[in-house]
Amino acid sequence: MTFVLDPAATAAGYRLEVHDSLGSTSTQALERARAGEPGPLWVVTREQTGGRGRRGKGWGWIPGNHAASLLWPVPAGLAPDRVATLGFVAGVAVERALRRACGPGVEGRGPDFRLKWPNDVLLDGAKLVGILLEMETLPGRGAFVTVGIGINVAGAPDGLPYAATSLAQAGCAVDAPGLFRLLSAAWVEAERLWDEGRGFPCIRQSWLSAAAGLGGTVNVQSGGRTASGTFETIDEGGRLVVRLHDGTPLAVSAGEVHFGTAATAA
Image (cartoon, rainbow, N blue to C red; front, side, top):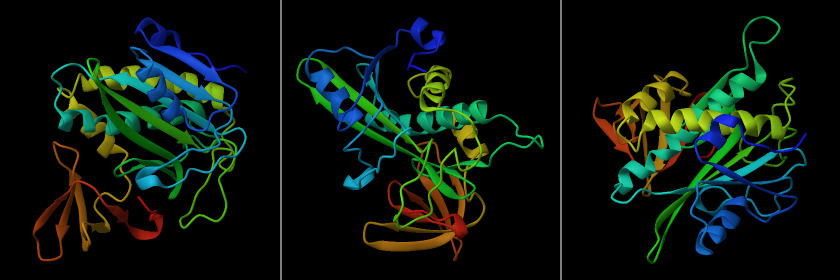
């Protein structure tokens, strides 16, 4: 099966560039922007040799897994805090695509996909998807965001400091091209709902409906300190809101999040 865009994505003006092998789809997408590519453009590869996650962490590769990045031109005047909420758009789009790919299952109940703040997707408490947003401003051209999405379709790397899984392990019979086509359509839906940040309240509700650990105990390491409490919600800016043990609310913009037995390094 070959990589193709869903017709809804093509109609919305998205284009696709497919490679046999790349170091990083996000690096390639940014290089295309520097060379004059206007976007929006999906960059997909069948093999990724230098994938990366947040804070420079590597993203291991197993043949058959999904590696794609979207080059998205930032509209003039769109505030950086609104741009940052695209990570939640990606999470909602990925979760929808996964549910459509895997269906309800033989007992009428689909796999337990959960969105982990700020940018992971879990399956039965183990990491399945990593999402990475990067932004670059080009002189005379404005700003571009790359939304990198790595999904363990065929297998999960060994030796990680957290639990990881794959769609194959869960019995979901989908390949990377099939999943990408669903994702390209789900992104269009979610991005339109987001509406340059004006519709973030709707995205926020969709994200919270699939949130991992909501209402449970959470530990957050941020800025050299550790805070513990209850994962209460995400606020209108996408910050994690923790109700500390003394009742004080704490809004966290970035950090490593751990909760329950589903903890993974953010």
